[in-house]
Image (tube, rainbow, N blue to C red; front, side):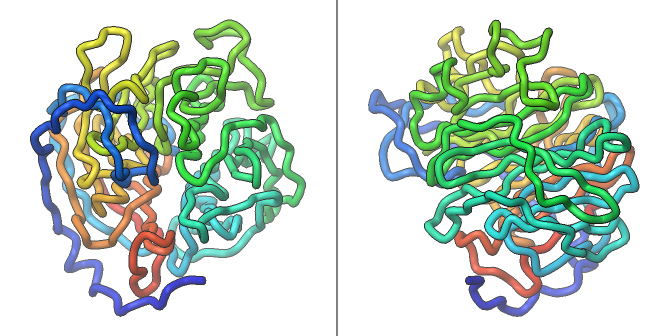
Length: 399
């Protein structure tokens, strides 16, 4: 049941230029104790081993990254309101979007000019949100062949595992039958992953969590704590995966929710840390990203370092969208929108906007070819006090 919604903060126009930056704090002393598990983006009770400290969905690829001025985001309009934990956002060819609600498993069509309509519900979804968990209806992705196959893919939780499946979407309705293409992804109260995006190669990429068991992230035989790459039918592609006969594309992840490709086809992922550092990673096939041995940077060359880190109280990075040479990242714990400038394979100049203005920000998605992003709040997920009209989907100008 939703908590009561207090009064709204005020007109969006007055908030247009609200912004705030936040640098990383000093690195905590490394610990030789094993890491502990807690809610994604929220520090746990026990110690965790860290690295040496910080460095300086689903969106469709936009223009190639390059040099240019950094945009100041401006809220253009509220597109939808009174949603329950909106998680996945994926765009239809006409520019409207499908938005999934984590705990109710409902899917709404949100119009690009504003307004929402329920179009269906994903069968078989079991949310543990009322127990403080993170499972339910998570990522959504429209097939790159949507005009002919009409498929909408979903990453979702059951009572025993996480799965990926597709449903037909025709004549404004999501069909009831779920065609499961992958099952057996580890499931837990926390760390269920859920990112889902089609790459420019036409393959489906999914991010999974360690389900609270860090050892799974280093076990290449497990689907937990990984980024997976698969065909539209959930099979290992004939080419491109680093390990023979395996869906595993990268490993050593704690909990990745956000996946996005830049304009030249590089894959970027946001990752929740434990007690020390959240991360933005450039994903390369076969690489080990270190969890649970390290968070942040490491002197151990077997692990791939993140491109950007944040202290966990400033971030809790969830959704990511890339527009031009800028990555836009929603922060749950930090209650803000982060902007990071991408320069080829490097990332720098991170800056925070809307600090505390809208509460927890989860989904961030970019309509193909647009200079805007869509963001969703996540204040009805049990970890914040909802505001009037929460949860909302907002259109933000970034160009």
